[in-house]
Every structure is written in C-alpha cells, then in structure tokens.
Length: 288
Ligand code: KIV
Image (cartoon, rainbow, N blue to C red; front, side, top):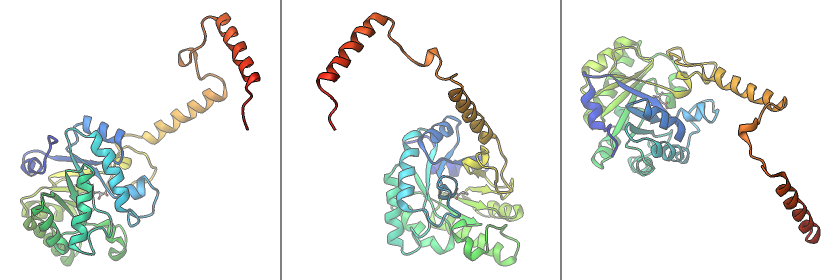
C-alpha cells in the first residue's frame, strides 16, 4: 500500500495543503512521486494534452486503463487517482462500478468522477465496495457542451446552489475529496467551509484545501494554457533547443563523439575478421 491514502488526504484538511498533479506515463509519474506530490492523477485531460483531441469526450476506458497501469508502476508514495472518462459511469450504476473496478485493477488507489448530486448513488456503492472516490464540481469539462464552453462557474444563485448541492451530496455519499474547477473564489471558500472533506481547486482560488494542475500546463509544454495556470517551467523551449542542438550536431558530424561509440583496438584483428566474414558471405550469399 502507498503512503498517502484517502484517509490521510481527509486528515490533511485544515492542517496542510494538498498538492495534486496530473501524470500520464511512467517517467512523469516517477518524477512527480520523487517531488513529493500527494496525489498523482491520471486525468482524462490526457485526451487533449497527450492525444491532441479538442475535448475530453473521446477518451475511452481502455486509454485510461493503459495510462493508469504505467503511472501506477512508478508511484511508491503518492496516492494514484484515475479519472472515469465520459460515458463510463453515466449510463448505469452497474456500468460505473465495473469501469471503476478496471481502474483499481490497473493500479489506481482511488477514482474520480465528474459530477456530484446526480451520481450520489454510484459514489455510495463504490465506497461501500471499497473503491475510494473523489468528486468534481464547478466546471466539469465532460459537460462543456451543456455549460456553453469552458467558463467560470458560480456567478448565479442557481450555480452556487448546484455546486454546494454537489459538494454536500458527495460528502454524504462518502467521497474522500472533491475537485472544484474554475469557480469564483468566494464560492470555493463557501464550499470548503461547508464540507468536512477536502476541496482541491483548479482555477478556484486560494481558499481550497489543495490545488491541482495539469502536467503540460505547469511545465510549459504548450504555448497556450488556461488563464488560471502558473507556469513553473518552460520545458517546451528547453526540449526544442535540445532537439535543435541534436539536429545540428548530427548534420555537422559533431555527434557521436569518441565517448559515444566503440571500435576495434587491434586493427589487424579486425582485418582478419573482416576478410573471413566476406569470404563466408561469398560462399553463402544472402538469400532472396
Ligand atoms: O482531467 C483532468 O486533468 C482534470 C483536472 C483538470 C482536475 O479533471
């Protein structure tokens, strides 16, 4: 069992901020775990940042299982959280249960679903079956068509009520935490105060119990990032420069250098072996 458990995440509320980041492959997850990140999250955002899709709606269960397996192999300390993709849990509680089990069997410690109140029965059943659940309200990208795009949430009385209802339903159903995405910070503060489980914010301000960012956004892999992202590195420029240097070294014959290859020290020995090899080839020509 990994060091960070859902129970530990709940206990961190009010004591220590929770840090969560997405990771989609083995090497990234190794680095995230070494950096001491509390929750390493295989988000369905992989559809956009890894597969170049326009939204997360095309992400399949098979893709989530595949990436969860890679991440889970790397992580020793952090909590491995896997996202339930679009239409993997909406059709029925039974289908949601089976799909959640696939992610747990791939190595996740917990799963996340987008939504709250509408999925309270599923959350309750999953938790009773031993599958820890994180909810997600505010902006839920899997519902961006209904919401009218990726927009700030919580400006109206109705939206504030809906977000609060989701949070309370998740808490009641036994979720161990919830993501609050792109809500006004006052709304995030209200929710954080109203529920006993931790809130993990993304674009929702400083009052949440923790923060989550997408790997490619925080490391500066793409030029365009959502407005609430802080870039902690400019990896795109670093990687591009390295590749340009590699290209010019190869073109100009500067790579490989002496320390990157091996040659016969005894050239006479090589000459003997070369002759024998050529003779053999003449005796037994390469078949068509
Ligand atoms: O898929 C994802 O990366 C997410 C985060 C934005 C929380 O759901």
